[in-house]
Amino acid sequence: MTTSVESELSAPSRPGVVHDLGAAGIDLFLAGRELYGVFVRTLYWVVRGRRDKGATLRQMYEIGNRSLFFVSISMGFIGMIVLYQAGIEIKRVIPDFTLLGATYLELLVRDLAASLGGLMLATRVGAGIAAEIGSMVVTEQVDALRMCAADPIDFLVVPRFLASMVMTTVLVVWAGAVAFATGALTASIAFDVPVRVFCNMSLIDWGDVLTGLAKCVAYGAAIPVVSGYCGLSTFGGSEGVGWAATRAVVNSSLAIIILNAIISTASLLIFGA
Amino acid sequence: MAAGAGAAFLGIAQTVGAMAVLLVAIVRAMASVPPVLDYHELRRNLHKMAVKSLPIVVVTSLFTGVIAVIQAAPIVKRYGAEGLLGWGAGFATLREVSPLLTALMISGRVGANNTAELGTMVVTEQIDALRVLAIDPIAFLVLPRFIAIAVTLVTMTLYADALALFGAAFAGLGLLQIEPRSFYNGLTGGLLSFGDVANGLVKSVVFGLVIALSSCHFGMSTTGGAPGVGRSVNATVVASASGVFILDYLVSFLLG
Image (cartoon, rainbow over all chains, first blue to last red; front, top):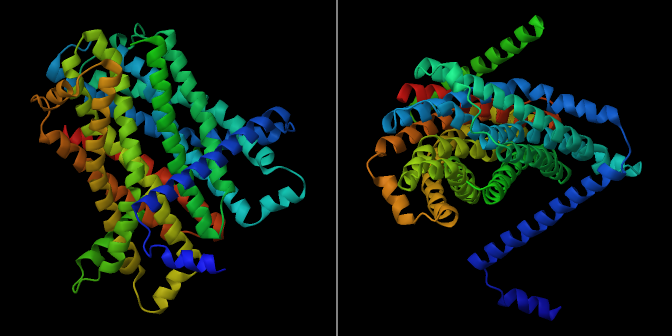
């Protein structure tokens, strides 16, 4: 008793920078460990869980079909912006547009389609998953699931995990096609590059395709796991649900950016420049 | 099919119209004499939105710079244009990548959070309580948040510009063995000017207005308890992201 009073008295009244940094570090470590726990349990239930095809199909519709409009609009505009900005600079430095389409397609396959499409999906799908699961947590539906001996990860996260891996890949391929089409349109209108010259696949090799597909699968797995973790750790009422959705968007976007850096570096080292 | 498309179009038109009405109300509150801006609320929001977002902006922009260099590496190697890496990374980062990614991160962290906060106030009837006290919720709650989000995005974009170039310079050293000095020379060699930085900053102002407007609009029009707050947050991030991309194209085209 006396020791605790003494230690409180001797403790500094205002915690310093070291204290803040340490607290942030410990929080980060604990969150990382829990996130890892959710990921491992998701993988376990993917292998060992019950087979409920309806749930996965419903989530595929929710994640895939209902994001189609949003992803098409955003990626269409991205295609026009990227091509327009690149065209302006190429005009200023080397006025030669013959390899514009090929380079753009290579960049799209290797990185832009997966990463920008992934960020879009993290925004829409991540917020949706966290808001839905978070609402279930604050209305005690998740506790009811546990009472019925149904693991919430098996019941809620696994269908979203499987659906997201498939639909992210499908949507990214579609997003790349949309971005390439609007890019070709911009090139032919703004810079007079014929579509026939623009559609040039000579720079694409297996390394590019594999890198792009690896990114799709990694992002598709990361989004539901991160957002499911954020949703399941919701507390408090409606404010908590809002917080969970916010954290899901930020953390899944961060996960995508960090995974992108890791996969891009690995592919640069494996396949060479 | 046609009915669905029509309903979707009407829904979008309704949202855009409601945002325009909100913008008029905000501008009117801003221009009112005597000024109604609550400085305490503004300072509190600026701290919560800008200062607390610094870590995430730092991490995002450092990684973005690294990714930009990795993606430029094959092109640099193919043409042997080591001296142009600074120019390429600088051009992409300053004009597009850093305003765009900062806007996406701020829309996720600040815009969604703001919607959740306003939405919670709406569903717990705190806004009605303000109205009962004859306090205009637009002037007291929305105006400071609107200004704070716009200011946050511009300042964060400046930070992100600097940090992304820093990350790119060291990624160039680590992955392509290009000295930071030659990266810096490519950056300042005359191909880039203040116009490129200003281009990015103009964009970030526009993005800030869109994010602020959509987050305040969806927050104030929340209905239906805790699930309603979740739906509002989801709608905000989707609307902000689409708005940012559409306006990015228009602004790029207008500024040239």
